Length: 336
Image (cartoon, rainbow, N blue to C red; front, side, top):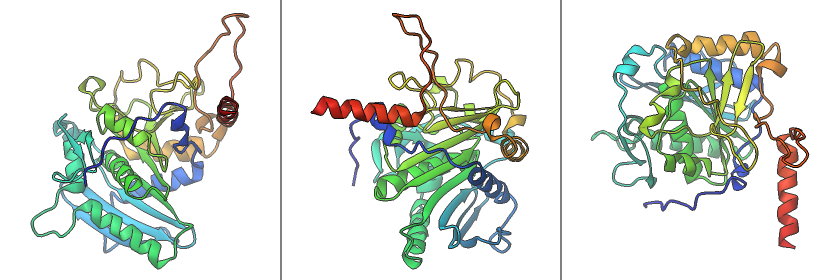
């Protein structure tokens, strides 16, 4: 059935979106898996010892995807391969959009996304009973049923095109299964959809999206902002310089009401194809983040510099937890 566009949530309500920063070791694990899928296969998945292969597809045009599970970790991982190099990726880049979901039965007819990304998940060949989205969704819930996986966490990851697919799949699964949390951790993700898709996906209370961007990675800045494509979820900017380190930007564009800063105004400038390789992300996490989490990893969102207009005194930064507590206390008092 066609899904009506829900009322866009206000900034304060968007705090229901996952804002618990993923542990650096968890991010490194999914970075390793996102690198691994470029070279493994169904016959030789080469997975770490605590993972089991549940589903694997290899398509020449769109790369590999695998669903893996770990009874020990209580996790299901959905990992997409992408395009490690960017020359062909840039040549094939287009800016057409279509409603999110299957062509004749979209998940949300108002939320438009990149046509090419959407087709990878939802196009069904004549000989296929299910599209890729449905095949993955069925696999995930077969695992949960088999393992009595009420306590399982579901993570989605990938690099480049794979990162884009992880966002779309995550949004679709979160919409279909509002009683379960889905967390996306990806690397070098392009913009995937329209402003309405951004608002709709950001409003899904059971979806958390963490997009890691290494320095001037060109793909993370495509399609260009003037093409009316937007990023979903939070941006984690990774810089090697000690004066910047790693920085987290709330829902990419920030939030005035919550005093969270958006990415800098020059964020789209100075794009680099060399920065896109998945090896850059792994090297950063393992060389910098794992050794100095205070500087090269994140635990708080960047905040705007705010000055008290009466006393001209700089307002001290509040932690996200303090800000949430203060907000709900205010709401409670207002309702009394």
